[in-house]
Picture 1 (cartoon, rainbow, N blue to C red):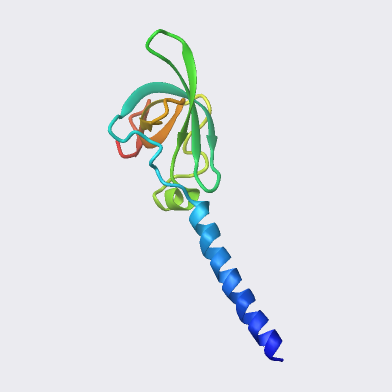
Picture 2: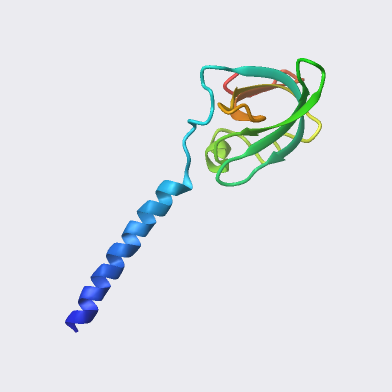
Length: 127
């Protein structure tokens, strides 16, 4: 009986430790974004991904030399955004938007969402 008790305690401790460790790895920081730089571009929405743990807005726009680029813009989680009034159809493919975001520190074509303004003047996020 004593063996089962000791094993049970060890198993419980291991489960608790694993739950804390996996929770810590489940979320990442925003350190990959260059928060000293804000990019603002006029873009076309290619796709809006309403997924956990973060939403993604795929956008396409012309860079400074006229080449089309596709960028992936990361936002908060759907649960947080739903409480702020966002919905799975907040962005539709083909929408023309002005969008502000923090670019990636490593220069890859991605960023962290700040805000967007639609053609009809409606804004979402921190505009």
